[in-house]
Amino acid sequence: MASAVRKALNIALVQMKVTANKATNLQVAREKVLAAGQNGADVVVLPECFNSPYGVQHFEQYAEPIEGTAPGESIRALSAMAKDAQVYLVGGTIPEVPQRQLYNTCPIFNRAGHLLATHRKVHLFDIDVPGKMTFRESSVLHAGNHLTQFTTEWGPIGVGICYDLRFPEMAMIAARRGCIAMIYPAAFNITTGPVFFELLQRARAVDNLFFVATCSPARADPEAIRNEGVYPAWGHSSVVGPVGEVIATCDHEDTTVVAQLDLDRLDEARRFYPIYQQRRFDLYPDVAQGL
Ligand SMILES: NC(=O)CCC(=O)C(=O)O
Image 1 (cartoon, rainbow, N blue to C red):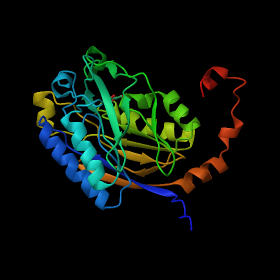
Image 2 (cartoon, helix red, strand yellow):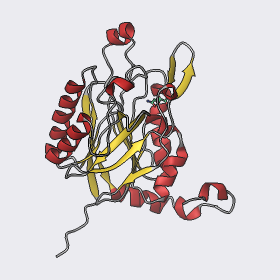
Image 3 (tube, rainbow, N blue to C red):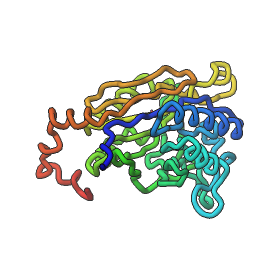
Image 4 (cartoon, rainbow, N blue to C red):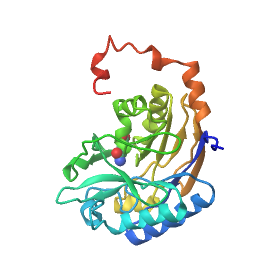
């Protein structure tokens, strides 16, 4: 007898503290991914820049190759975590150096530890809010040129990285290609986080009537932020449902957020609000191209 299709998937967002020690970061990630798997997670997500401090001055030092015959130690460690925990692992991001160019890249593994896909951050985080937050990823990073999704038994899931969340087109394309969710490893900060982070997640979710999940690093100690210029991560890793409801969230502490993505919620939202059938591509053909 064919087994019933499972209608819900369990997700865990590992909001871990990231240090300057790569080996420690990998060990902490491993412990938390294994714990999440033991607690029933199907999909586990790590934060943006989980193996290195987040800052343009650090990327080159921590960068590793991902694909090819000699993947770096973070990729080998992530593959083993996914396999040992028997989970899909959205492996946060690491600075990637395939040849000379650097990228901010998310590797995604299946339950057997095989690399399913990689997403290179498409929209680089270049902003200048004077006196509050200036960041210029493009001073050292190159932007990726591909949209990314991976396949699961619940349906395809799209992947973006942090600043990619601000661009509705990416999530919209994923939704129209059948994705049930977008997952974003992310590291918003104490300037932009309170204003935009939840708003953007809820907007992407309700625009597309699908799930949105984000995973941030935990915030560093205030002295390290004040005295050493450590990036002040906002935290607030969250799962948002198809009508923009916050299903699970947290503050900025070291924690793992768990939630269930119940596909009945998605079906119901799309039945109640049939925007997928009501679009007027005759009036906006430019946004229908390529889909
Ligand atoms: N790491 C990032 O891309 C940060 C994005 C961010 O903080 C924003 O406001 O956007």
